[in-house]
Length: 154
Length: 410
Image (cartoon, rainbow over all chains, first blue to last red; front, side, top):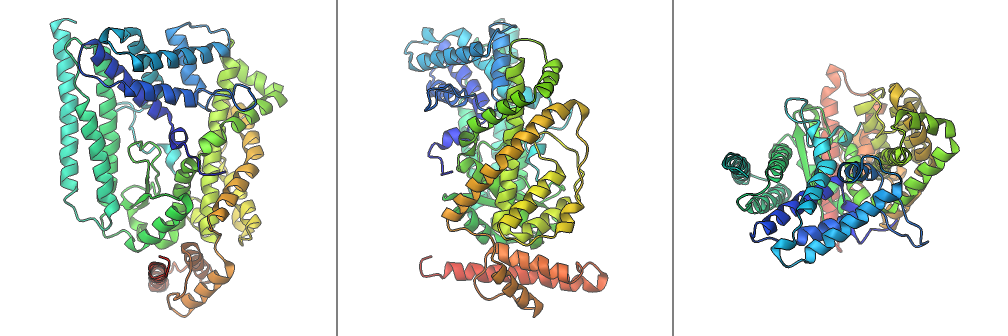
């Protein structure tokens, strides 16, 4: 084990992906409305998804997704594409397509290139990666804490 | 979008902005406090800069989608709520109850172990949630936060548990989530394949569609990863603090039996693994303490997952342990020396602080050994001696700091 030079990958969390997804939705909406916008969030989100969704390893075999990340992607697929996916490859293909769309959107120049469907996808991504977890603990149901139970020594 | 919806969106966005403004104002007031170290002020500035950036991005053109506005407002509410707790932590880190003497040596240990600058906040907390780490603190990735319950916050003997929290930072800095990702997934697949009965039971519990197996693998892998991280942190604490980690751990959590969740090895198993690792490192342990640890039962619905997770974790622990110990050794970090610990103990026996070079782990281990030799020092007539022991530990730590600061290569 050595210190990993790619700290972004090491520090990548579900929260980070959710945060970038919301930020991307925000910037796309600003672009659609003709307001000044910054598309770097889209590129960052695409990079974060690339790092978490698994890719070909040195043996040429497709590695697994980051543990714990498959289910949010699977939920997103069921919500946005089909309630009854037929194979795990469909989920991976769906994430790859999403990455391609984000890459393309990050390089688009005109406001009309900002796709409203991509805003939908980004919002859903944010919900699956961040909101689903935090919504369970919102005020009125149970106390929400930034210091989750898992963070305790015991 | 109709006028009503537009007005509602505008109000919600304005409310979110006002919440951030109030939050920023609070940071401004806190920044006027007197900070014993720069780290607290640095944390405030880092949080402030992030929220200023967030505030600056809250402008949407007219007619923006209502669902985007609502989701953004919820997100900001969560952020403000999360970091308000952190602001409280930062404020309490300035309280004189905190053992400021420990700041330098702990920070030095972190810097040496992680090979990078980190900021450290030690705080006295009004909850018996003694130690926290920045798991959900995305805005402060280079900070380690250690909190101890107010009644015991100036007791240096519980500080070894900070090793566990530093371990969480090490887990990320060493790139473990990336390094072990495939290993964990492969091990879970292998374990599920080798136990078709358990796998079938898990499939029965899920919707019978094509993705059930994928979801089961993912959930099991997620739990394995979390358990490995927890054990990694325990092993980090053990390696750096030696015996004192076991004593402090037992003091705080012994004899186990707290509710069992899938994200942690069971209490008893954790302590057994620690004891086995201690033996490997040549750290003296009390076998009776380990025998008396217990574990609460696992919920019936989680038993099948637990079976898979436990087997996979047990299979991977040796690799995690070997990697961690090797990495720490390569950074010239070693477990506390028994010889130095005994020398420190002798000084304490003469009611003197140790005046030579010793690590934090050696000093605190000696403190625990002294306590054990003297029946725990809990009786009324012994309280003064317990206080003196705490002072001896802290003074010895200050000597170690002095020696470190005046080293020719410092």
